[in-house]
Image 1 (cartoon, rainbow, N blue to C red):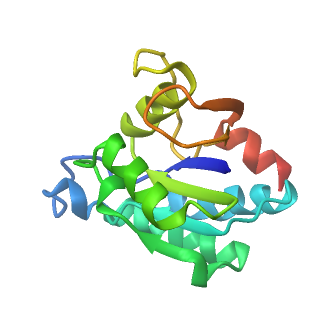
Image 2 (image 1 turned 120 degrees about the vertical axis):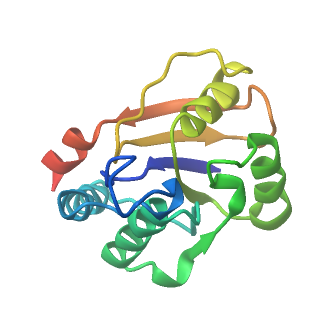
Image 3 (image 1 turned 135 degrees about the horizontal axis):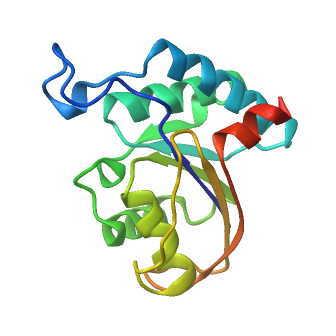
Length: 167
């Protein structure tokens, strides 16, 4: 299985008047524009996914919707509370194994520090690796048998600036 992890694009800054709840912060116009360019970079790489699974939190949802639309994968988009800011990696892995084990290529759209911790757990066996995912950054992991712990190889981790240069 190929797992792609995408951090949401640039969102309204925490504490901005009118967006007191963290979950209500949308992407900024700059974030939306950049996400379209990131999706173009994904197309240039020839990426396609059997499933796009996203956090239901607004900024991640908007990021996933832009990617799905630009990649022509709107019907492949689904949402999981396990990718939200209160989600647990172990529950996410159980969900993936229970519902999506037969799929070859899945993109997960979520938040920091959760995505970096998940990458660390899957490639090193614990959450101790120092990994930084920029907003709009994309990581590719190859997994033989998904489980909580060391089970994946890191193929690449791209910054959004690298993805936008590919478009």
